[in-house]
Image (cartoon, rainbow, N blue to C red):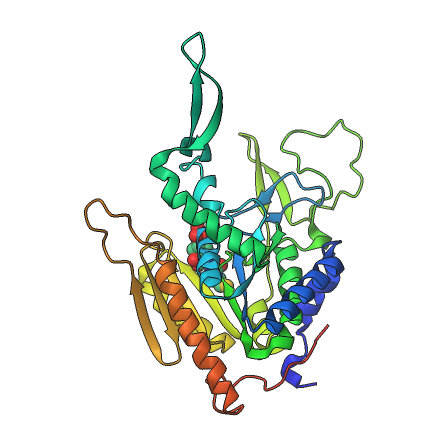
Length: 371
Ligand code: 9Z3
């Protein structure tokens, strides 16, 4: 085994001290079947991660930390990958936006607004016994979405894998990556999920709901942690209790993905910042640290209109052109995905010409299963 493929102590500890999702072996078999079938059909496979991860504060979870991500980037990108002929493993936060249904599931885009009633008028002057139809002005767009959705469904080119916590995300990512190893650089990782950098380690996690009120007369709580061990403690302030949370850093899994779990695949990570002054610096730092193919940088406030591709050759901004009067703004993912596909083709053709010909000569040369 190449030394760089040996899991770090942090990573080992993370997986050893957390429970895997109970259905992981079954999901793994489903992913394996999916990857094999599409590889045999000559399709490349992309893992698109999407949405935010939760960080539970209690074992019997009432409260958790979350983030803003709705999964728009991931769900939209997945559609364009399907259009480009990829099979897509969509690793998404449960109940975040999904490819195709996203057009009608957002709260500002309620699907009921697209429908109208059609039929005979009843005696009371209201429509009665009619049918539900799509409003004529939305029909063309909906037909287009419906056809694409059906094509993906019939071709079984979209595999939906939900997660909720950062831990279930990491177990699933590792599992899918292992299953995608068999297709070498035909595998693409497009990591758009907003993954928490912090977590509560199990040995410091409260078993029961953290109490904000006075418990002095109550029976002792089973499994309660002494304040010195607990990650979340309450402190009396005089005006009520204050909650103090002490989180550990999540080990750097991108490194493990690049070096151990998917050493031949093309890997693209996203970098999100709010301060424009540090975006490029952080993208370059991530590229330098993890030595993967591409970082796509974006700012929270402008992420729908511009992104920057950062690789070892330099930077390339992608911007949505301003919509003309009466026209709808195009989706930035319609510009991102063709550029990603072009770069994936370059990676694949470079590797065909020999291991040193690709742009990843600094990476581990062979796959090695670490777990
Ligand atoms: C992104 O930067 C995505 O583009 C967004 C998409 C989360 C901004 P929405 O779901 O938002 O369309 O609302 N994803 C990656 C964010 C992230 O956590 N990156 C890590 C980091 O910045 C590196 S893997 O440190």
